[in-house]
Length: 88
Image 1 (cartoon, rainbow, N blue to C red):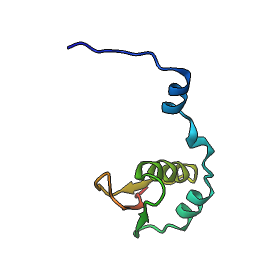
Image 2 (cartoon, rainbow, N blue to C red):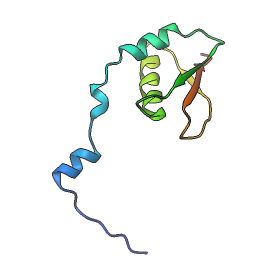
Image 3 (tube, one colour):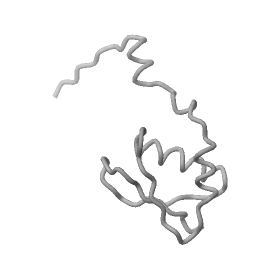
């Protein structure tokens, strides 16, 4: 098996390795995690972003509050993702 490598242009590199996640305001995620109660499962509608992005930012918000989240296993193209506070 032979692998073919190609050097990326600066434009391609910036596009594929963008650090856009730092520009997202964490406030809505922090507020959502603060509203969560233990023992209750929540659904989050994936609208205008990806489930992966929502999980990333929700997990960061929870960690900053000293909490952790537990996510349901769903297909990648799910329109709604399920989450609950993890037992500490």
